Length: 74
Image (spheres, rainbow, N blue to C red):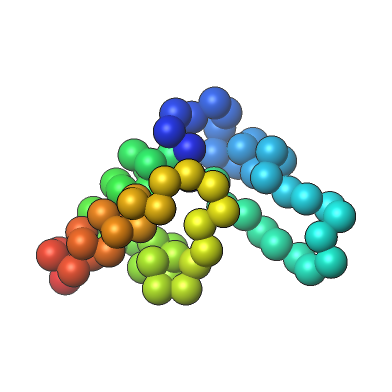
């Protein structure tokens, strides 16, 4: 999770891909504001991220906030 966007959404992924990993990982990189906006909209990717996802970078508190938003809106 990024605080501020430095690139277009799709272009951010290249900074988080590690070709030396022994398994395929497809990172999805959002800013905190983007992620929380998607939580307000109840987007499926946020629902799944809260339920199954692993935060690889950033403040874990954003998942708690998203979880609360999903509970209060649904």
